[in-house]
Image (cartoon, rainbow, N blue to C red; front, side):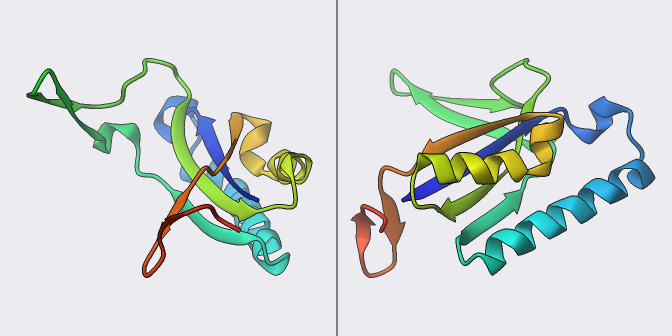
Length: 126
């Protein structure tokens, strides 16, 4: 089954941590990513730019709305994600528990409904 581990946490500018303070956490994420990759379950991983770089686009009642920023005032913002193949939800939870972001933020574990791939179009992931 495919799962996305969505990481929500306070952005660096909101934490008061310096680049030097963040170095051990970057190392921890590197080890975590390598562990997922070595286990053969890592599909993708992305760390997102700060929410201040976000642009929001939507259409309501046929009218385009362009907004700047994020949809939520919550101090925890979507900061990145890992897409993994795990045997079941319990295995995905086990990997989420190992994620460094779980120590200061929130990890949402969401199963994939369908995926898009070149040549296959929309399909249920293996």
